[in-house]
Length: 316
Image (cartoon, rainbow, N blue to C red; front, top):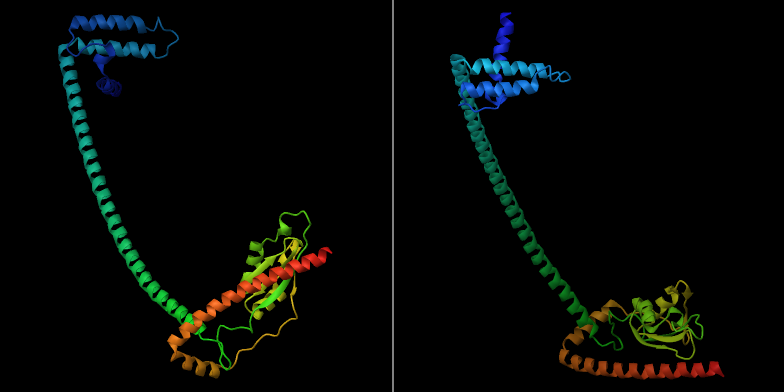
């Protein structure tokens, strides 16, 4: 019995009696009784037979009336209620303080992490900058080395190829001419897939192409002149043309033999003799270049005339 009363007292202390009756904490006894009657009429068990909580709510209203209409009981309840409200405020302030401390701690941790990240990024940036500077220096040295080799090669190629000397860039004994044939219908505007640009692209990988004449009358025919016999030989042996329309490559004249370079000792002696005559060699190089261009123009004109003659013979 005593345990049951103690449990009921604890339950009563946990309840908001003013809120249960819907009145203010300063309400008079008269206002308390009026509120009780209004609430009791709405939740009486006889009026709510289908509501299992009606009897419990009616009982709680009765307890609220008993406590709040008794001066001593109401004073004790009000004291307990105010103590609970003060404790709730202290808890709220503590929670707010804890929340602020937590936010400050998180902010400091974030700031420290950001500072660490910035330091790491700065260190990485400095390392990258050092590597870039190193690469630039090494690249500059490599560039200078390659440019030096190019200058040496150009200088060696300027040595005239006279009798008894050897030019390291000379692979064969002069230009060579080839005849190209492929299948091409008379009204095919694509020339069977072989335009001059296409032929240049296929043949230039073997060596310098001096001249090329594509027949405008005789479809599927062209004449090409390589700067060296070696380049022409490579083209004859290796070039097959387009997969869907192969090329037939043959020598325009009899197949010339490849010229072999002379010994390195001859090259060394002749190169030394020419190095003492730089100014004379420069004049001769210029004259040789002009003469070579004139010969190329004349040779191209001759090839055009030869191809036109073959076209006319083929049409007759």
